[in-house]
Image (spheres, rainbow, N blue to C red):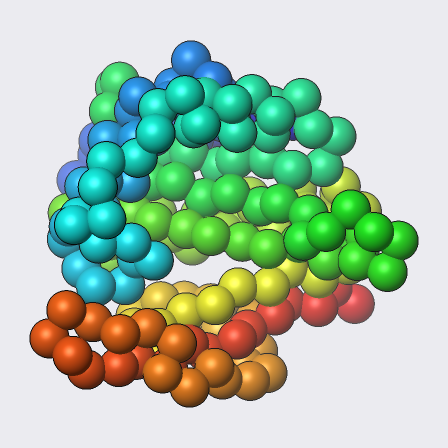
Length: 183
């Protein structure tokens, strides 16, 4: 599904368009995800993992656009994609239909300006409207900024996957499991 387009203004007055990325945006999504993976170690992939498959991204975005429940919340300055948030059903089995998984990335240049919180508000409202009862995510244990924002948005830490990520320097990071359970 596609969300309703909205505007957000950065503290310096620049206008951000918030809308759903669709299959027509596959190249922008590809470039955004490759760029964010190079900016910090907080993404699931490393640049050395290779380029993302454009055809696969196009297919996934088309599937999400047609979905009745899954959606994207994407942030653009002009034509440039600077933020990407997806909410998807965990599994299409009856016992899982109440649960969604959330993944999010914002270019470092645009963090700390309230954009992530704005995108998250939209996502949580839409997830609830789509019938999800809880939204779950995993976050690096050393990503204090993200953990703070998630807690501010109502997520609670429920567990930890030890040594979930092995970095290029040989060190490990735990994954903190969080959920926002709608009351």
